[in-house]
Length: 120
Image (cartoon, rainbow, N blue to C red; front, side, top):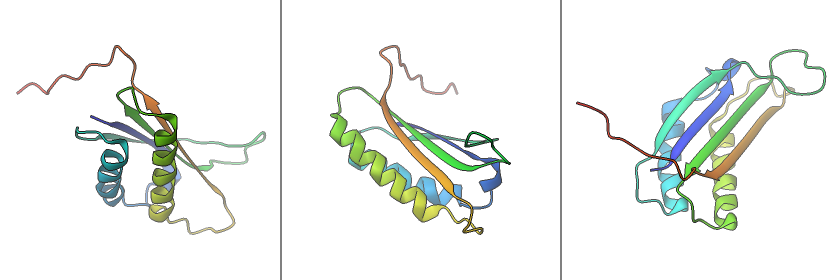
């Protein structure tokens, strides 16, 4: 059931293997969240900027993990830390002088959340 959204700087399109990341991310999220469902992931390249006076597109990756309510904050924090570590492992930045911003948010899905199986 976990829903994952990965927004990342379009400049990073070749800096990580999305398939390899997702292959490790799904079991990590299911295992650490205690979910019995199947992860669904949406990857979105985006134009990203950081700082008060951006000089160009920033290297930025943000992962949002949506879970059914009920998990303690400490468990969500541990999951966030694990996802950050996995991102760092998969992100290959050639220019070591440029900082890559990585962030993760583990949140509860809204009470209105519903999932419908795909139509055949």
